[in-house]
Length: 255
Image 1 (cartoon, rainbow, N blue to C red):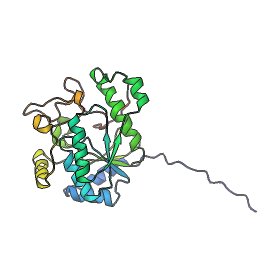
Image 2 (image 1 turned 45 degrees about the vertical axis):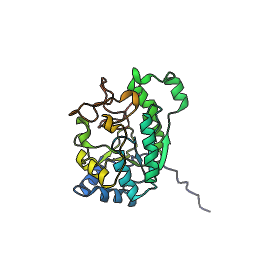
Image 3 (image 1 turned 90 degrees about the vertical axis):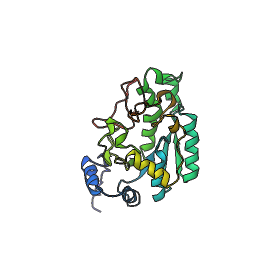
């Protein structure tokens, strides 16, 4: 018998997607309807295995309804930080039942909470650290099995989101996952019209002056004319929780 040649196992460490893939997809879907984009992404697998990340905030029902209209089996990832408004949790339950969502609730690691936020007050002196423990890390663990995520971000929400593309590379790690923003070019009037057309329930805090809703300790009412997200982390030099980075290198959590 001839000598057997052993083929060494190789581990592909290349990112799932490159910047060129995001550019190509943005060009491919330029001018095309949001529903058509979602059909192609979900049914044709253009982004691989994907999940929708939802905060069940002020405008979440529109995207949840759009995605559910294509495929109700899409995993809906909800970060249960332990700091949400009771109204948000009730709204989550209402939409989950009404839309038949495949809800997956993510929670912080109990050991990390005990070590880094034993009092539960980290938000008051280190909101970045609080978000990292309660949002960034749980989502990173859940996303390990996905190639991309769908988000509800929209360009009109704040100055830092203006010009948001429909497709981008997720900058929270070096894995090269795609981040899909189907509502990037939607404005408030279009969202309102979608809610009316499909008789979608509103988050109960919207009428109370909360156009963008996060965790209760870090969300304030917004004055007329202000950016919808100006009530988030008011008084802090902070505009995102860490699961969405506008670009650059992946976040490095600091404690």
